[in-house]
Length: 316
Length: 316
Image (cartoon, rainbow over all chains, first blue to last red):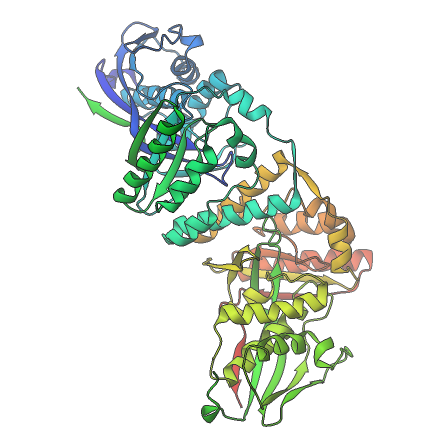
């Protein structure tokens, strides 16, 4: 039971990082948090029951709790709080563009539950918070997936070994820079799922799991060459990349510029590339920009690093 | 070039360990060396060119070099030695039963090339030795696979991320005991390959690569619970296990007796189980024995540990 005697009805500020799910060969199992972009939220524990959501951004997202990803994640949390007479007010300034493939909905649901839990004196475990935030993902994409909310909450690179039961493994990794380009086109997660083949050849599957084992080993060993060799997806990328303008060229030029490798972020359209150092990551950004400038695709780019702490809380 | 001035025309003794390939979810990519059983060989560098092979066991294996797995592995090695006027005599006492699924052919080819290379003052790298030994596997099974010869040469648990080009990754693991039971039935590797489906569902493939990532992470973290949870094969075992008497019952009883998990060794018919301690591994052995005694299947068992050094050389 939450001890209400110790609750402080105060306001905190939250920074909820963007996340890259489906790290190349790690489709549906590997995700990582990055430092930029990040959503800003302000959460207040209120003496009135109920959830009030406000947006101070341009996206016109729903504010009814049961229609809002942060709202449904909080509702899932409150359902396990026992008898309650308090509530939350959330003001969201969404910086991670919805539909970017950078875990925008995950940042909202993860940020909301991490912040609310802090105001409840960390009553729930991080594992619980992942469970709650997955309700937001279910609302956003129709699937209760965990590969964005988990790294958003825990930071770093995370493995979802299994969803049912939920099995989360933190994967240590060496320092890496991340270059992201977000072409201003729309790829719906549902569509990106639809075009995948339901069956794959055993040969390709074996190649993929060799790469996944290599990638995980490369992260543990801080072996950049092994990471680079293992950043290969023979199953999902060949299909999904056709939805993203100039994907093959961007990848080729990025690797020629020194990137370790990379691929589609989440279900796209953003493309991410990993590099060992910042100079390379910036060269990669320039290569990416040149290509979209040439073919006239509008875009945003980010050069950032892996976020190792997850959702960040600041007292105000 | 091999500097013949430094060669010593002497005899050494070799112990080439058995290996477990296809570690559960790691089909075609993960293998490990175990301390028992192990083949015994005696190798002499001779001043006469050519390869002479003798057997002092009961298996009546071919002795012509080009028909013998150790012979073809050595021939592949000699082909990269430049002009040569020396040769090798090998006496093999095969302890690892052919057709057991414990890397019997791999032990012959790996043992031969490691021993011969020692006599050549370690002219070749271990990576080269894996390449040579793979020729033996090609002769034995028709496929140039590396998942037995690699752990046999390097010791420990090894990942073959890719065969072409060959990419070998050593995976550190915590101490574990291994229980093996070898039912005296024949499963041909070629048959075991034949019954596999050429296509698998994407859903199963994702489950498998989640388990592989979990298993590799579990080895690195020395996390026995994670290792145990990840020892699940949803693709190959359900098909191949029907070739092995009472497989499901043996697995169930072994896990009930405390085993972390396990499965088919190589392409069978041997079954292996991993345990945290020796007492458990022996209890698992007893459970296995009871089952085969009851249904009247003849067997051999081994209770052993992971072999971390690979092929062992003794001067005589």
